[in-house]
Image (cartoon, rainbow, N blue to C red; front, side, top):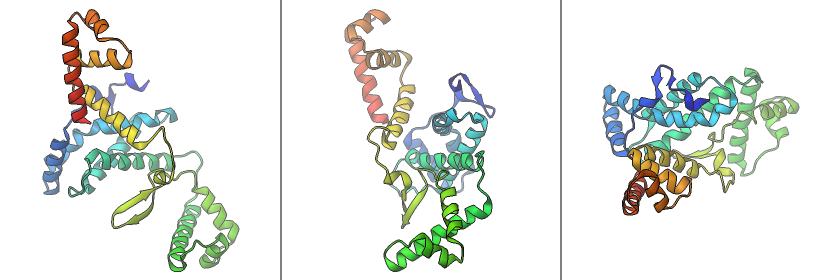
Length: 257
C-alpha cells in the first residue's frame, strides 16, 4: 500500500518539510526576484502537497515514482507562474496545476491511444467552433464545422468523440482576462466538492502541526467518538486538562485552515 512507502524518487516522505502560508509568500516574492535558493526551498517545502494529490490516483496502479515526478512538474509550473497580486493561497492555485499535469500524463500514457492526426483535427474543430460561436452568437453544428475545415462530417465527429474521455476536470473551457472556467465548474456535486477536498488536505496538514498528545486527543474525541472523561482515563490526565488541550488544538487547526 502507498501509506507504507517511505521513499519516493529518493525523497524520504516522512521527513518532508512543511511551510506556513506566510513563509510560502515570502519565498515566492524572493523567487520572483530571481532568488534560485528561495525557489528551491519553496518547492521542497511544498512536496507534501504533491504527495497528498497523487494519492487520488493510486487506484490506477500507476508507478508512484512517476506520478510524484509529474506532480512535481505541476508544482514547479505553479511556483513559476503564481501571481502574488492574487488574493488566493498558493496551494489553492497549485492544486489544479498539479492535478492537470498528472491527468495529462495519464491521458498521454493511456493504453487506448488517440493518433496525433485525430487529436489535431479535434482541436482544430474546437477552435473553429469557438470562432464561429463568437462571430454569430450561437453554436454551429458539426456539419458546419466540417465544411469550414474542409473535412468529412464523420471524421470530425470521430475526432471529437476520441478526445472526450481524456479531458481533465481542470481543463479550461473559457478564459477571460486570466480568469479561467474549468470543466468541473460546469458540474454539480454536493458531496465531493473541490473545496471539501482542499479543506481535507488543509486539515491533515494542520493535524501534523499538533503535538503527539494533542493529535491523540483530537483523534479519540472526533474520529472515535470518545468523551473527554474517557480520554482522560485512557491517557492518564484530568478531564480539565483534556478540555484545555482540545480547545487549544482546535483553535490552532482553525487558524491553519
